[in-house]
Structures are given as structure tokens and as C-alpha cells.
Length: 469
Image (cartoon, rainbow, N blue to C red):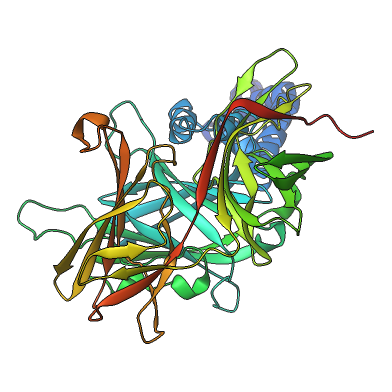
């Protein structure tokens, strides 16, 4: 009996201490319980963080302006610096009027990042960076079928000042003459040259022609040695392109016996556009107009702010559309148009005929003189001096000239420089224009004038631009 009592007590003592495996299981269970309490305590905050993260990813991918706003400060600084040359584009960037492109391509060790676009109904500005290369010539636009986009547009390339950084952002401006020419989807071919290395030969000269007044002027830069082509497929968000603010005017002004109508103003995020009309009975075409704006407080606005100053249409050679600093984000009140110079081309003006043997020319405008005719290579070089009152880079002749047999040619090389009064034989400041007739073997040439007279007004002609009631 006593032995049974001892066995029973030993069994009870054994049960009081759980086996080693069971003890480990209990410890694991206690740890799981603690984790469960911790998860319950933090489950709501963790769910909120996950939701915010998912929302952030969606916002960045769906809304480029949100992505731009969340970009690092250096990127925003570089983007602003790339358009610092333009008050209009700087204002657009400040108001987040930017579409994100975010494409990159590398060709032969040269890398181009097409970062952003600032687009309204008349202008596209691409902001990009290039590593190991430099801008060469105007781009090529192709539609979705691979055909050239037959739009008249001009380009300029401006390198931003990025505080001395070597490969900062640059901007390329494409200006359209009509809103319906703005494509939604297109391919852009951009042309660059690799940076010249000390041991490599000199880079080729710029191409003789690029995409300019019309598609017929296009010559493929890829045929030029050393040129690299970068191709990007771009889709614009047309819903994010702002509609212009239109200010109707419909007032006439008389300049030098010619009647010009001030039709309307348009404010877009990248520029202000002045639309003019003309009386069909005018005896001269308006070739250029120099003007500024004044608001009701007397503040003067005279910044053209763009590569394209004016344009014409197929219906008339007059320059009747002018591009100015954008008033879109801060429209001045009580604007007045102030005109102080106009350039005209008589409708019945004859062509200028130059005898390349004697160096004589007939039909030149007042103050314009042919000073030199010089054979050069297989062509001829003509040097013209024109009065200072013309704009510095205005040319005396149009792009087309004719040989005595009626053959039509186009200028491919023209240079214009200013000659200061102290360097001029007449003691007056002049503009020197040098025209090159390529592969020209005839002894005479027929030139088409781009203007016949210039008028300056001591008292500017003023037209109120307040909307007509």
C-alpha cells in the first residue's frame, strides 16, 4: 500500500512539469498571442499607410503634374532654368502647365532624355537633356502613318543655365501657325552630333536646309556625316491643353495710307497672339510691324518672347499674325497697342536684276546698295548694305531667286551682321547681308524684294484693345 502511494505521488509530480516539447509549444503560442495583440493594435494605421502608398502610385502615374510637383528639388530647378530665358514659359512651369514625357534613348554613346513638354494650341516646347552630344538642326515630325506633318513651324534651341552643370536641360520650341496643325500623336526625330573629341576631325557644318517655311524645304539631316537621329513616339494629353482666352477688338488703324484692322488678341499659356487684317484695296503688303503694349497704369510691355515673331498665310504675303509675351496668367487691364514702325512691300514692286559681270543692280529700295559681287567656288557671293532702321536680321530679299532662263532657285546660305557707324564708309550704322548663289553659272540673277519701304513714327499710332461692346 505504501508503495502505491509513492508511485501515485511521483506520477503527480511528473504531470506538474510538462514535457520539453510541450513546453516549447506553449512558448511559441505565447509569442503568437503577443504578435496578435500587436497586429490588432497597429492594423488600422498599417492599412492606412498601404492605402496612401497605393494612392500615391496611382497619382504619379495618372497625373503628370502631381509627379512633377513631387519631383526632387534639383529636377524642378533644372526645369525652371531650362525655360528661364522666357517669362511666358517660366510662368507656365510655375503654374504646373507641363506634360510629362519621360522617354530616353541612347545612340552611339550619346544619351537624350526627353523629359517634359509645355504645349498649347500654337506651340510645343520640349525640355530635354543630352549627355555626350549637342544640338544639330530642326527636328522632323511624322504622323501615325509615318508621313511628314505638313505644318509650317519654326524651331529654336536654348540651353538653360544650370549653375555651371555640364549636361543640364535644354529646350526646343516648335511654333505652329494654326491650331488645327497641332498633332495629338506623332513621332519626333531629333538630330544631334556627338561631342567632338580632341583626336577626331572637325564636325560637319550645319545643313543647308532644314524644316522651315514649308515641307518642300526639308532635306534629311541623316544624310549629313556624323549626325545621330533620336526617335520618340509622343502622345499628348489634349484634355490638358488650355483653351486660349480671346479678346475681340475689331478696330481699324491707318498707317502710311494703308488700312490695317486689329481683329483680336489671344492669350495662351506660352504666348499672346495679335491677329491683324488688311483692306483689300491696300497698295502694299505689311511685311513687319514694330509695336509694344501699354496697360491702363502706363506700364509698357515690349517682350516678343519667342523664336517666331510673326507669320503670314497662303492668302496674303502680309505678316498679319504677331507673337508676344504671354498674358495668360496675369492679363493686364486696359491694354493699348502702340505702333512705332512699319515695313511695306509695294504690290507692284518689280524684281531686282543684278548684272553679275558689271556688279550693277536695278530696283533696290532707298538706302540699299550692292557693294560687292565675288565668284566663290562654283557660285557667286553678293554683299548688300541696308539701313540700320530695319531689324538686325531682316533680309532684303525673299528666299527665291531666278536665273535668266527662268529657273527657280532658293537661298541656302545667308548671313546678316551689323556694321557700326565707326566701321561704315558712310559713317552710318548699316546691316551687311551676304547671299550665296550655289553652283550658279549665269551672268545675271533676278531677286525678289522682301520690302520696299520702312516708316518710323515719332508719335506712335495708338489703338485701344478694350473689348468692343
